[in-house]
Length: 206
Ligand SMILES: [Zn+2]
Image 1 (tube, rainbow, N blue to C red):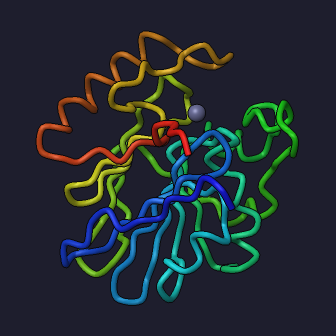
Image 2 (image 1 turned 90 degrees about the vertical axis):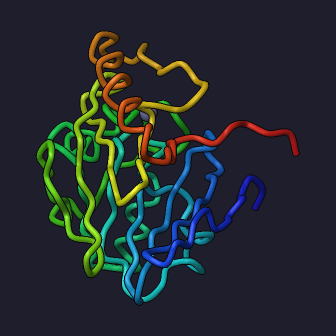
């Protein structure tokens, strides 16, 4: 159980946002909750997020379908069978292919069992999360074609499209440097009045 740093990031009355740093690559899962309903942004280690899932887990918003951001999904769907998983078409392809999501190059190949739970989002689409709170999906390709940045109130969940202080990784087979720069510029503009919740936490000595 090393590497877990669950903590409340914000509890602004509208919703709670909690961050869990996962055991693989320090990727981050965020738990958003309000009034007995919860949502995840990405999904890594599962047991450590369970204490923070209030009531029903309604859905998971994926920032992209690289292995380190999705590997807990089968367990989550087992625990919460009604959970919807939101991503774009490229994201769905990654969920179905251990080659595209890179898990075949790690210890445990991963593909999503519950493909029927996936809902495809379009660029700019709004997803209702809680009463009066919605998420907006913005396609931010570059790191990967499956990258989606999620805006929820004043929070921006940027995945690996924009990690403050870290150069965006664009050396994967499906990366695109030009698109990555465009997406970064788009996100940076939004950060003027939004907080960034990135896809990885800094690696810290313990
Ligand atoms: Zn990634």
